Length: 283
Image (cartoon, rainbow, N blue to C red; front, side, top):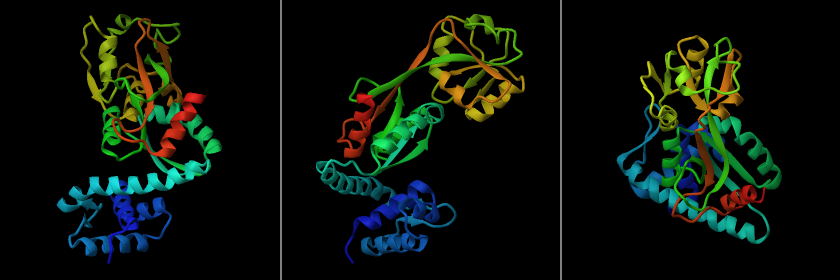
């Protein structure tokens, strides 16, 4: 039996989605078909590629295979999509990664616009912290990403996101037009230790900085501020997910993060990614 792209796609989908059922939904086929495709791949190669106990994970051989499988499937898709582009159409399934605040505050408008402009392109969104998003883009897990403060390159800036103090609405400074970080020194500070930590430290430059808690999950951070545990500094895009009882106050000394949409650095971009990014440039 010869190796084929359907087998490789099934293998990658199980790894990326974390299960056979989720992979089936992604590929638009039955779970049985996914299972058969992976089993056929293992027979063809003569080695198991997945551990099937609990959440499926790659075997040692499967882990070695991952990069080659991604390259092969990407090349196949690129050839197919290139032919479609020659006919005036961008098509294919594109995996896009972005930080949670970008997914909530920026992507919905872009996704709606792309859906109208590129009806044959399907976009699947993955949320991750800043460093995770950059790694996924570099290793081929996703084809396009909104990355934070990347080095100069071919991507397109989609906005600057200014940082704000996040306070309860009954905080004495909640109604101010802006706030100096020094004015928050008496409040217990909660540090978001995801991708925004260096921006928060930049905002405190020259000031004492002793967080009382380090919080990774954004939902936990919001709940703690709302409960009166402390205050924090967050990107402005968080406004799209702000619960009642909390307010954002701009920082007097402006700190921003650059948001750039880009394909993988140093590699050929998927034709549909070129179309999506080109659309942002044109807009």
